Structure formats: C-alpha cells, structure tokens
Length: 179
Image (cartoon, rainbow, N blue to C red):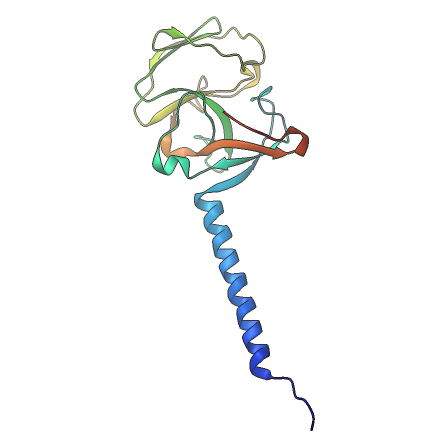
C-alpha cells in the first residue's frame, strides 16, 4: 500500500493562503488610505521641528472626524499641483484674522508665541481673514519656506489636507511624537 498525498488537503492549504494574502492586501490598502500613511520629509522648510529625510506617520483618520487645529503639523496637497505634498504648521483656521508685521505673527490681533521657529524672519503679510473651510500654514523655517504667504500656496482648503503628522519613526534615534 502506497501513501498518496491528499490532494484536497493541498488545495485547502493553498486556498487558505490565498485568502489570507488577499485579506492582508485589502487591509493594508484600507489602513494606508483611511487611517495612517508614511511620509518622507523633503527639504528644510520645517527645520528645526522636522529634518530633511525624516520619515513620519500621518494620521489620516483624524480629519474624517474633525478639522485641523492651530499648531498642528499637517500634510496637504500642494494647491498649485495636487500631485505634490507639502508639510507645514497650521497657524490659523477658517474665520481667523492673520497678519504678519516685521516677522511677528498675529492671529485675531494677538501676537502668537512661536518657540518652534528656526530664526527671526522679517516678512510682512497684510491683515486677512482666513476663509471658512481653509487653513493658513507656515513653515517653521520661515526664511526658507513656501507657505500661505505665497500666492501659489495661499489658503489651503481643508479638503486638500491629507492628515496630521503624528510620529517620527525614522531614523530610529529621532523617534518622537509630534504635538
């Protein structure tokens, strides 16, 4: 009597593996699309808070249930070319008044404290109301940042915001959560 491999067991095992792989791919797609996505920092516009080539996780789910808040660091689609992503800090939200006088940022008439900026800057921005459903963003390295002060960025529509920068995970020595 010879032992023949049980063909139905092999087919069951292959079927189980295929189902597991399909479920894993669908789950990974859903997580990346709706929950969290990795992001590579490119450039120095957010220095010293974020450094060039750091990798971070962007919480995408948070803005399905709320809107960006002042002080948060967000990733958004560049308004002039939505195939590109930018990362900046939210300074003001819809309905707020923004003004920059000789490098001092005023939101609703109050000079905001910004311990995170790299160095003093001396630009001006006329007093303007942020439209509802939009945010005003600035880089932490104001002297080297293309942000809401520039016409090609301007006010960023909330629907262009991809998510909130939450955790820096690479390089491992720089691991930290963001405010």
